[in-house]
Length: 295
Image (cartoon, rainbow, N blue to C red; front, side, top):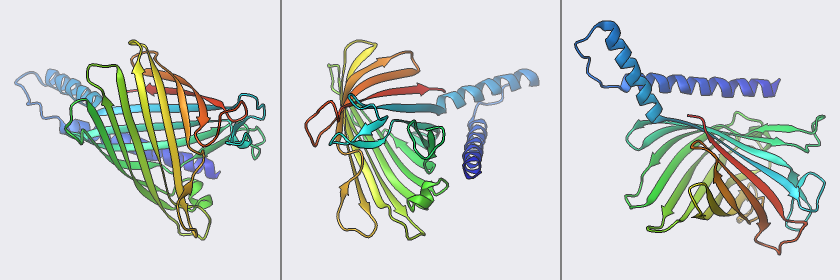
């Protein structure tokens, strides 16, 4: 019942966001009313509103599927030592943003895990929502040729089960993305950083601050395929402790190939290894990425 109520809250919030966006798109048009019949004028205005909405609104999804280790048949993503870390899973993001002013956007971001080897579920599948994210997004922050930048300031209300289990009753944070295409080459380099502060109204263990850094390097082989290398480092500070410690998964690197399936679908396959230990068949696993632009 709780999960159904949470899902209804997420759905209601998202529908409300879309309604506000639609109203903003209609109100923001400044096309002059031409001297023409009323029906024709309304038709032109509707087409203008739709065009403006499509230009300013984006809706995308991202999914990463993680496999077990190469020689591990326990349906678990491995630890650096070759043990069992977490169940095989898909990490999913649904997000939409709307440009309300030049280079400024409203953002809605929803994360969802699906575990395929969850011992707490009779079906062996567990579904876990994360706190929803509402953000103010600024793009083109730095006026540097060939550099794309995105900065987010976000809040995450404690509407999901993690608010209770992890003490994440309210969160806020910052996210930055920098992507640079090297001139006269096929190389692209970049990095994404994220830092979240968590406020708890309960005396439960959990992270008061957590974040990660992900850097990448890619080389365009042709218009369809490109090499991909991503390195991720996760850090956290737990309540009642001192100092910063690793967050799971431990620092790891992903090497693979990306493919532009269509103009709106991008996919990639990776081999994953930890950076803190030598790779073996027991701690090497694979990932599949899928990114879809819906609108």
